Image (cartoon, rainbow, N blue to C red; front, side, top):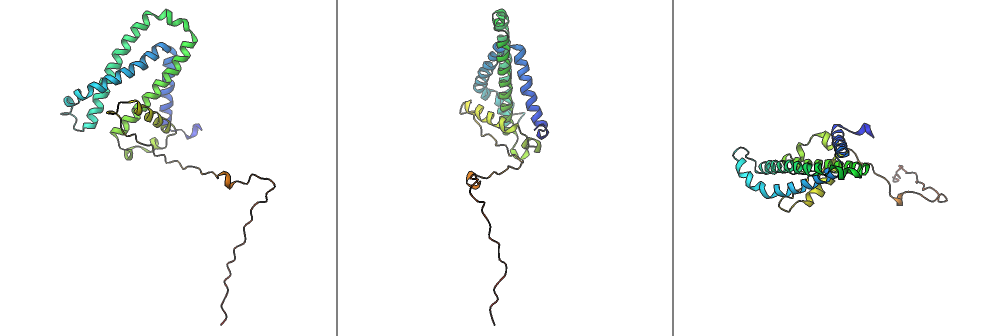
Length: 209
């Protein structure tokens, strides 16, 4: 199975693994607050990005790209500020949270992996907005991980406000799909004889003169 993975798959797996490792180190409390901070940052970015877009349109003529840049910029700034306050609050109560021990770290790893997966889904949505599917490289269309990221992108898109929802690009895989016979086509009764085929006659009857 590993032989069928390309560099896109390795990047996706690496991002999720790093997220899990970060969550294992930070613990569940910090990761959960960080994930909740993403939700707040996305809500604030949705409210404020229309005000920032007119200020950057003189430099970026593509209105869709300007909206994306405005949203991402506000989202990143809000996420940094919220996470900074969260780290201060958690740091002041680190002794209380450390009592959870290994459970806190295991849940933190799961939450960190979930955050990384959500991040990949967001990148997929933004990539579909900026680049048409016809411009996607073959390695992206042949990736084994992209269909799973697409499912996450659909779910994240449904959570967004209606004004922010976009049409998600469906990944076009180039790998051939195997076809399997249905139950009706399979002979499951051992006592039933196998079907025989009648020999085809190619001789043609010649009309008498």
